[in-house]
Length: 85
Image (cartoon, rainbow, N blue to C red; front, side, top):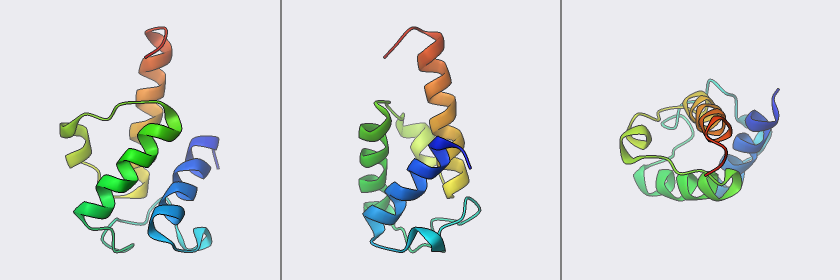
């Protein structure tokens, strides 16, 4: 499991107050009972944790823990390539 994956799962667990062991990358937000309000809180937590900015369009396409992990990895790679935020 990558560092990003571990951190995203920890953030999901913290924001949803659920056991991190019950969260898999394949878990959908629907399965985890993450509604749009919870999703916003999670998004803010992820942006703060990784010092990134997720666009509204990208946020709308997030449906699972895997989507979020891959999105964070892409934003971090883009940020690194551009020399910072």
